[in-house]
Length: 338
Image 1 (cartoon, one colour):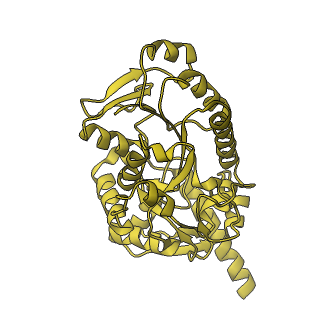
Image 2 (image 1 turned 90 degrees about the vertical axis):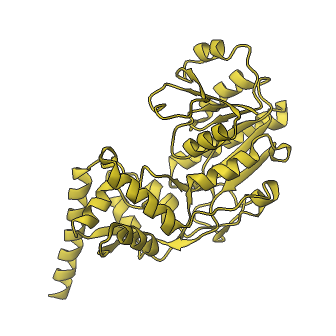
């Protein structure tokens, strides 16, 4: 199989790149070359900015692909560019959308691909919905061979998957745990969430590549494991070898008192209980099964980050904000109790 990935080195795509390369497929990555260190030797690089359409058009001249996948498209204009570049050049175009595009709040906690797409809280999700709508029109009107993939919360060894964190990543939360400081959990920690290791996501994604039954379809790829946020934070604390000190804060309060986009990231996504029905994926890819249990995957991630100081990005502004929020809640409790 000859495939082209736009991106190919991010959290979602890196494992797909590795697995395809190990299987001996002809894989090209089109990116700016900023994160290509350590790629398998048989991966071919087309170094360019995808936004420079004229340059990309010249670089892919003479190429035709079995699959083209765009991992870094977020707005319809970027898909319009992709359509101009790859119409007639690929047998399948795969767009990475988002499970946050599903109805928020949900009318049923069980999510299937038939769940309506609607997210009034998060512009990111609405843009993904608009991207999907554009591609569906191109499929219906012009036969553009699309497959829409909706990841949920996918993680790898480079970042701890969390709910409440700052702009600079999630390490600061782990650092607070290691310093025996309290950490914020949104809501009461009992809502259900699904996290998927990128190794497992890659198995589902590769099974959809070159799959004639996936053309024109939308499919989400997630683990079947559902856990509460309390369990997630307990797993992280256990992997760090510390006792969890949790402070519960309403998601609405967090959204109101932070410059972070918690309205989108929490109210429009992580604050909602979700359970994914992966029946459609398993019909299309019968061999798919997510085998990395969350406690196992997070333990791997934390061991990797602890062994790689370059991944331990501190975020003092977020740390100070956490202290301020926690102290404000404690002050309010003291005032009411006195």
